[in-house]
Length: 310
View (cartoon, rainbow, N blue to C red):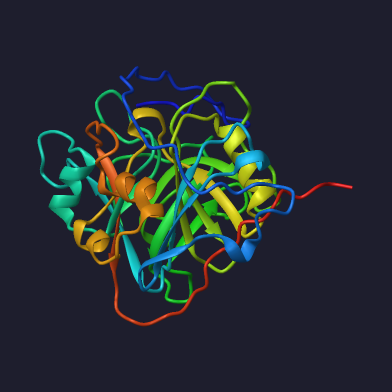
């Protein structure tokens, strides 16, 4: 397990496991500068396929301590989310994310939350309505939940257990992974600034109901990242942080990437999604994104200059 390098607000401590960190990620990209030089309509969202868009966003002067961000916007009406854990798959050891992609054939895969030395998950982890062994963590308030048992519910959510009441048993979703709450619906940052920096993976829900997957290209504190997202992306409803450091990882299927005509400005996000720009450690649990049937239209989220309080 690798802690995020920051303590959650009102949480208990967990002794982290030290891991090697080795990554070499591209840090170039299109600069978005504050002060009016970046209009929301100019955000370079590019369609990967119907229901998935990608952007490589450098906050620049808006958030000078935050590195470029890979962002994927995923429409839950078109895509389903699935939890995978190596023991549930009958595997003797965890897989790297390229190996997970080959096994699952998911369009997109990203790392789940934290785990112990023995690779057991810290917090709730459900697949197809079955608990994969993790008990509810009473301090970590973020819950990524998908594939509801009630058809009236949204197909994927970022739930805040401090507001969204979920009992001690099965949440009303077939797929769920608990982790650290980052930014809530009131705009409150739910992490303290420890000054510790790491690669980060964030899952957010926007006000349109889209799921945003955010991966940092370089190391940053969770507090700095949360503050930047709060000030520059008001379209975010709330966000949670998955495991960070060397566990922070994302990959897209070769078929998905091959369907997009290569262009010069794609180099940073394409290499990151292809899994060629970083080293990959074994991950005990990942979350996969795969297509479902049924058309649905959703516009790209907006990125704006920072808001200034009067």
